[in-house]
Length: 199
Image 1 (cartoon, rainbow, N blue to C red):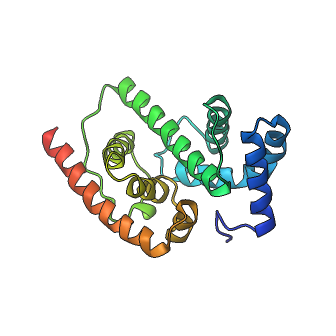
Image 2 (cartoon, rainbow, N blue to C red):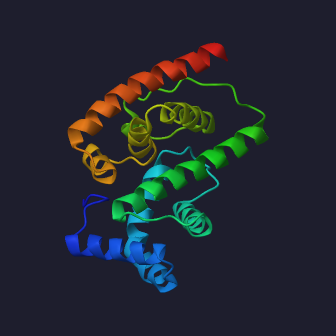
């Protein structure tokens, strides 16, 4: 199976050129861009949705559509290239799913903190709304003092990206991603345990 982020150099360059043109205000570039990135956005959304519990109100296509609407409606982004586009898309999908999880939890009047293990995060089949929210809160705290480690967890846990794919998005070595992943998981495990103990 082909990697999510592995495309030919020409294809990647074409996406980057269209993103830069879109940043410069070329509306037609956006129309030409969408067919080129749609399949990869669908794969990214599928990885996010595979982690969600059964009965989730969003489906993969709806998640892609909502992320794309937010990309268009948000403040103008000065795209740096294809990897930047997919990193921003991954973050938007995370925020969309967290928003849905918070709304569902509020409706259920639940919301107690829960213990979440990140030991085998990419292999975890699904996460409850409370788990998604707990991890999001912890990631926000981590990002306050180490943005890259937060991004590594975001891409690995929420996006299901491999070490190599995460390295490509963040433009760092796989060794750096592995080190960040190990340190971030240890920090987050401690943070999540504290949250549960304080609940």
